Length: 442
Image 1 (cartoon, rainbow, N blue to C red):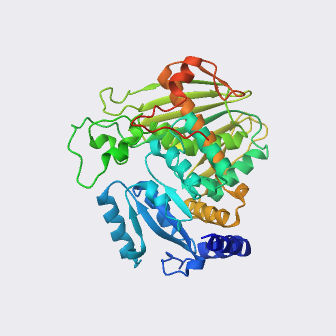
Image 2 (tube, rainbow, N blue to C red):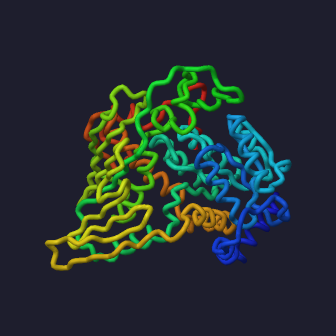
Image 3 (cartoon, helix red, strand yellow):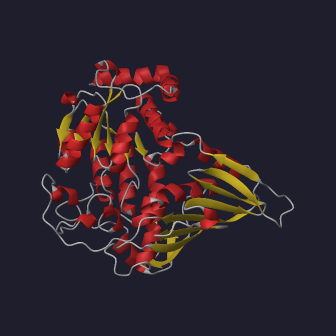
């Protein structure tokens, strides 16, 4: 294992971005199959095969030398479906190990890195255990489901020295970087307000009765550190994100992507104050717990960032269902996944108009190229979204949710990394762990 890993690192140093980038730009490039020479392989295990976990796996397989060698999920139906997909790609699945317990997967010495695509409440434990086991990690966003989890994940990466990329793939898209560079050149003038919004077509969940656990599902393991509850489809695949036990609603689902760029554009790290108003306004009787409408104001020294979310309505600001708007004295730059543009400030003497610069690339694929290159070269500073960066914005999102849930104006102590109100800290900084689970002391 040691010699193979050394070869991988050496190969990465020799080829760097040349081999990977050329393959990425080759329109005929498809999936690398597991008949690659063993010395050339970078073996990946996938923990959590639904949604983005599988999107990450398919993106990983488009990088030269990457081979999926292990799959792990608590739902046998999902495993069977993914095996069928791999067979349709003419991949020899007989060489892929199957697990239902991620800890057994981490014992596999042939695995170089893991994808963590499980629900949010599992991210911290699995990422920490993977680093401890000597694996590099690609962990889906939001990286943690509490502020304390985010701190622990950063500490684990620093202690064990693993490459850890957060799945905020917009960090790898060209037009996002171009927009931030334009903001930093100062042409917008003084920016006093940044608007960030997500208007989602998703609608609040309607109540469903509890039912028996589906065949092939290890529901106890799925719950993990969360509170024991009867099986309910509303709390399972995908829609788990609307319940506090497992996630943080739209704020942590979309907020980590969008607020991330608000912070980058303003070269900001932590706010001084956080205030919020929101609730289940679209349907007070909805089964979901997280708010369908939420407005949060983050106060910094010389500007504010305003987050706005609404479910069931897609007509958002500037005619866009999601985006970030940097409002400067000379113009407003509007940025989202489709591109960026600048609209004029009519009262400014230094008017700026920049037509739409559309998105031109695949951020997820490029994010994976970056991760594999760094995993090979061990140049962690070149990660497009390190665990440190992912934890920073996940913490910001947690702040917004805590302001909403506590119904308090919060003051953040940047030195102590906690709120000024000890009662708030005690109740909300940590996720409550059940069933014998706990965050490891690092």
